[in-house]
Structures are given as structure tokens and as C-alpha cells.
Length: 116
Image 1 (cartoon, rainbow, N blue to C red):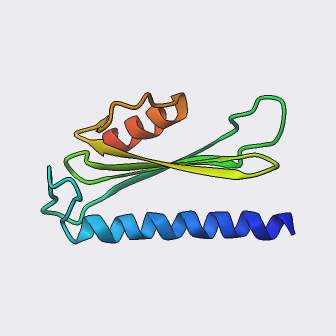
Image 2: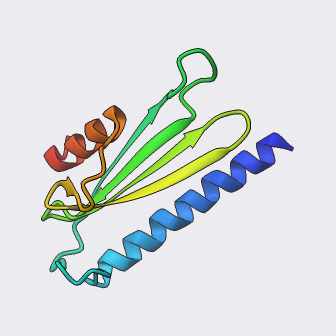
């Protein structure tokens, strides 16, 4: 049963990532502050363990950026009881609402910006 809920969490996160991809492909942004003229995307994924004492690398960050380093970070934190998913909008390589990024989010964002 637990495997079923984990599978649903992963599928729903992938669906969100696909919707974001379609959103940026149409060259629109909700805030209207920027738009993309190219469909070239930089996508990076980083898996990690946020809890030192339990579990494995079940949590992850996905960074989706266009050529102007505009896009989003999707972070999923997984533990035995639940999975939490967070999204942060990125504009010119920085979080839009000045949220503090975690160490893993900063690493994934930097790899996407450098396309490495």
C-alpha cells in the first residue's frame, strides 16, 4: 500500500513538471514579467536524503530553466509518513519571492544555470 502512495506522488510530481514545461513552451508567464522566445530548456535533477538518521535518497529537486535562467524549482521531501512538494519560481537565476533556498536547491539551480 505504501508503494502505491509513493508511486502516486511521483506520477503527480511528473505531471506538474510536464504542465510547467507546456506553460513555458507557450511563452507565457503568470506574472507577465518575462517570456521565452525559444523552446530550449535546461532541466536538472538532484536526489538527496534530507534526514541523516533514516531513509535514503528518496527526496529530490527538479530545476527547469529557459535560456534566460527563468523557470522553477520543484522540491519533493519524502519521509515515512508523507511526501511534501514545494515549487519556487526562478527569475534570472534567483528565486522571485526571495525565499531562502536549501543547499540542495542551490546546487541544482547552479547546475542548471551552468548547464553542467
